[in-house]
Image 1 (cartoon, rainbow, N blue to C red):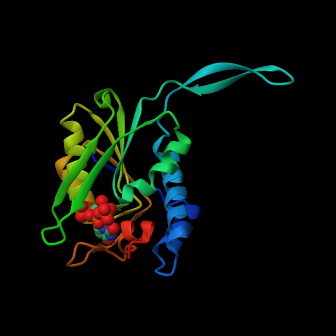
Image 2: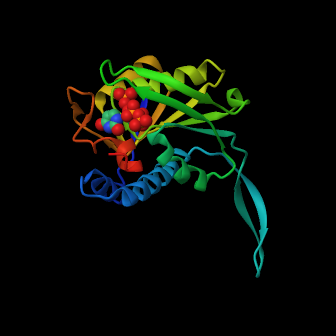
Length: 209
Ligand code: PRP
Ligand code: URA
């Protein structure tokens, strides 16, 4: 079933507005990407199963909950997905982290894969793909395709800003993938950039422009 969750909590909206601002310096931009990713992951892990545990407080014995096993692989798409990874792994420190390098050809806007390194047991894990900007959706769709080729079957795609075109592309190619995003914007411009968007996420994260 195709699903898009727009996580529009007031704190998230507030942080997204600062992220979009062209005057936000890259140090603050990077911190916001990390914070927003953690807040999104909080929502995206709502379906985690728990088991009852006994806990002894300083005053009494009581029952609590513990996560009942969660085999997760977090896969940032290089470069900009790297900015999201620390926010997710702070919440789930036992997650394995894979990396997929995909570059978007500026002429054709088609994804070009240049690096893949995934946990060997990726087929048994739920996979959280990280791509802050879902523009044409080509990079995310290609990343999911090549991870599916290695046997994985359960995917969540974490974005910060998604274009309707990108959501449609991912769900055309992979109707099973659940998308979590902080915002759905209007459209793409002629160069494949999201409007209003926030510009080039990689450059703003790493100060390369
Ligand atoms: C950007 C961004 C996404 C991709 C989205 O990567 O980080 O991965 O574009 O575009 P799409 O949905 O149209 O595929 P870019 O190619 O700029 O590489 P970078 O992250 O290394 O800067
Ligand atoms: N990649 C980005 O970083 N920003 C966009 O708006 C589109 C693709």
